[in-house]
Amino acid sequence: MVEHQFEFGVFVDNPDDHNCRFLHVDMDAFFASVEVRRRPELRGKPVIVGGDGNRGVVTSATYEARACGVHSAMPMGRARRLCPHAVIVPGDMRLYAEASAGIMALFRSITPLVEPLSLDEAFLDVAGARRRLGNPREIAVWIRARIEDEQGITCSVGVASTKFVAKLASTCCKPDGLLVVPDDTVIRFLHALPVSALWGVGAKTEEQLTRLGLRSVGQVAHTPLPTLQRALGPALGAHLYALSWGRDERVVVPHEPEKSIGSEETFCSDVDDPAVIHRELLRLSERTAGRLRSAGALSRTVSIKVRFHDFTTLTRSRTLRSPTDVGQEIFEVAGQLYDALGLDRARIRLVGVRAEGLVPAAEAPVQLLLGARDRGWRHADQAADRAARRFGAGTVRPATLIDPLSPSTRSARAAGPPEGMRPADDSQL
DNA sequence: TCTGGGGTCCTGTAACCT
DNA sequence: TCTGAGGTTACAGGACCC
Image (tube, rainbow, N blue to C red; front, top):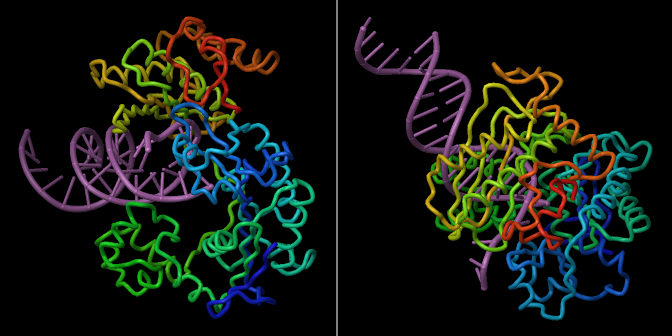
């Protein structure tokens, strides 16, 4: 366990944290740690969690595997070559979600101002918890101990007066660390970091900044704002300039409504048969619609994504006359958008369906189209939802998706039974 | 080396409206 | 009726995050 404060370019003890209301808590190698907790014989071994198909990627890896150069998002084939003795685990989202729920509940016992970023990390605003639980550093120490006790996994915590710096701090002290960055050390802390540490700088933007001769956050900070904006666009330029001076006005937002819901699937080998693509679009449309209904939302815009064998990607979208959460209606649009591409047996690697422009179902009375039956697909979907709740997901699904002979639509991710024997809605996984 | 799946946000362009 | 300016919306693509 490591605990630090950053000051004068070095880590020291006993920080001045009175302005540091934000905690960023990040589990260490979360999925892999949960797997090790479940199978203690894996402790101390390189463990990789990820799709085991020929097109899978690493979703999490223990630090023993990372020592071999393995990292998340790496193609599984490459990870295997780098770390041939690693134990590879397919992943169990249900288990990780369960562990995550326990961790988030612990956070909410400290403050209602908890903003989960994903299953394994969250921002906390602890300004209101000081009187009860002590200063931010003490709260961070307590959280780390409780998570280790209750979940058997370690985490890293960054403490600062802005969300951005708190997040950087937790990254810097990984794994199993605690770092407080007091206000008067923020600039020194930031300016020593590489540009890639800035939120919003990925590979492409880093390349652009390098072309300008900018490699550190300090160099970005000392570049005139108009120069950054000319190179990166007005929004990104201003954003990076503000961050480089530690300016980040964002607050902790406990719940943001979703803006889109979608599903996509990579075929285990490229597909050029339009009938197979249509079946997959139907399956993804049904899955997306089911998730819309669970979320109590309707969608105004349907979009599809098509990725070809060479990784080039197209998206097409259409806005509906009235919003929907009905699988057949989404599929109709998705199918039309796909047909309008006019593809002639192109080799397709992935298709996706996404519902955008979400509105709460309660606020958007569904309009029946002229000539439509008053008990149509919507009622069929609702009946299927009821059957799913009672008998399990996928109990009722479109007949075209019940085809045990279907040859090639199995995804790289699903290593289960044949397509037709698999639940149509595995969105809870 | 050969790239998942879930998302958000930004930008440029075109169409549409006033 | 035509034209242009300016605002809004839809759409497509890309970068980024976990």
